[in-house]
Image (cartoon, helix red, strand yellow):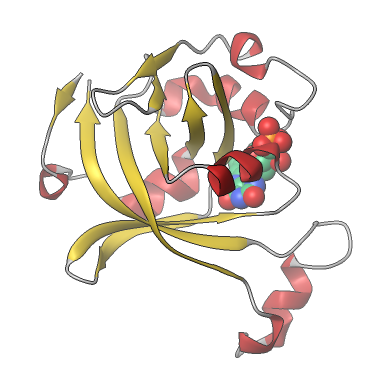
Length: 168
Ligand SMILES: Cc1cc2nc3c(=O)[nH]c(=O)nc-3n(C[C@H](O)[C@H](O)[C@H](O)COP(=O)(O)O)c2cc1C
């Protein structure tokens, strides 16, 4: 695992997150949870590199993100589609999906959990959080499409300052 400066990452995060997907992981090696995410962003805010993630409150991972100051974003690459599907359809509440997905947890030098399979890991420190607000949607059709009904609870947004960046 090699540490690089966030500015050295050349990936296109629109396709990386939206098409390739990522794992959001929070907790420590003895107690952590991970889930697949395909909504989010990486950019620059308040004079620092940041990542935005959106997590529904019913996710088991939500509890770990709430309880911990930091989380990781792990990018496994296209070859791990099956692992993403498992981590995005089963809950760590009632399955050992890490084992089922054949993922191998790894502690980053900064003490967070990622996976041996990750080709890129962003180590993030929570700096801002807020629930999605129905009344803030300019286009109410988007809220109607993605919230209420069978989709689940309103997402909570977390902005994480990207402290460390690791590549394999
Ligand atoms: C491709 C894909 C993308 C997903 N993106 C998100 C997301 O951005 N936010 C979210 O809350 N859930 C997302 N999910 C759903 C969670 O990954 C899923 O509910 C998972 O089983 C939660 O696991 P947990 O209960 O162990 O946390 C996504 C699922 C898939 C398959």
